[in-house]
Image (cartoon, rainbow, N blue to C red; front, side, top):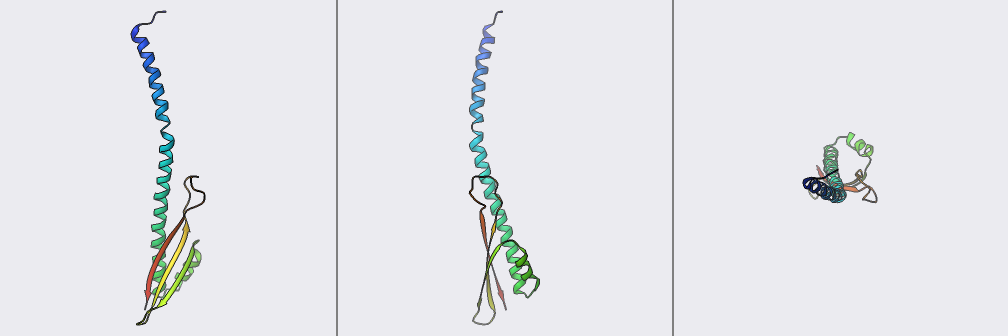
Length: 124
């Protein structure tokens, strides 16, 4: 069996290509970890925005006198702290803080991240 010089050159370049593909494959590990961390940040910030909108909706309804809004506070699975202060000219300032857990995308975090949201309304 006789090999030509071009066939031998092709086989040596094939080994170099394999080595490059293994080294390129090793970059998938940090890239995947970075992607999962960024996905966790995007998911957590989206949940925080949704929580803030929902909380502001409930607080505004409560300030307008909707009795169902207090039921919505009890139904949601979140830690809620309310604070109200009377205003000098009459009325009341309602401050609400809530904390809700965000789903965990990967095991890089020890526990579920907690998202905080705040809302404010004035009851006259």
